[in-house]
Length: 308
Image 1 (cartoon, one colour):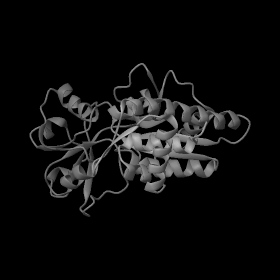
Image 2 (cartoon, helix red, strand yellow):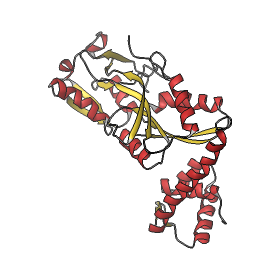
Image 3 (cartoon, rainbow, N blue to C red):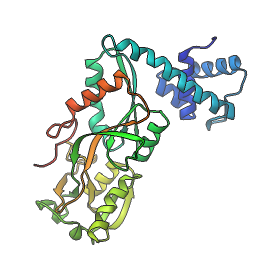
Image 4 (cartoon, rainbow, N blue to C red):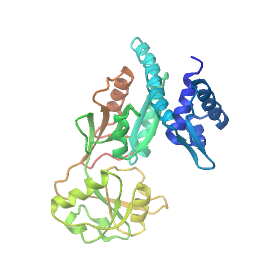
């Protein structure tokens, strides 16, 4: 074999990002090193892996897509050597952890850092995705475990619940409802709503109104949590959330107020998702145990626990 696992990792990074620049940032290596690795693989395998587009990145050829699938499997098998060795001692190896985009800024920094500090032979490769992309990433074995909510978990996914987060309404200081101790969906239905517009997440929030047989007045939408929070802080309307960031101000410095929802509404449960048919390595098992010790009802990294 006249190519290295490292060269395969660089090829995978380029294949997944479609860009030499993004691949070099993801792999933390220079762009010429990425290009050299790809050129070496193409010469060694005797196939063209990419079509190069001037100033527009890369596209995988049919052969490139096939090689990408096999390369990812080969890297996965190589990482199993670390898992096998770790059975006799401290866990070692690299773990691919996906996180829901709304949870990642709060939960993942402390979670990842504390895990790698406790187990120095490990490395966490982190990615942030919406719920739909996370579940698909598990099915394609792009990620080993996901830190996410229990939303639309199908039978092919195992989910370990950790902590339940009831929904709440978020208001800016100019909204008279910000001083309330609780608010109903009926009271909110005629007011402008700023919807966190992420796949599956939006369905969760809209289903609460449907259950109450009231119609929300969605005036603005954004897939970006901080855009929604800043619009709320500036008086555009209210929003619904589950996560409770410790920073109770928007990015522009304006104050935000969290008000519990009255009534019986299903919480979103933070937990760990894995592909059911995939045998969990000891590294995954140790990471899950670490999460269970760190994410508790009264203690959640980066956020306030639920009221009561």
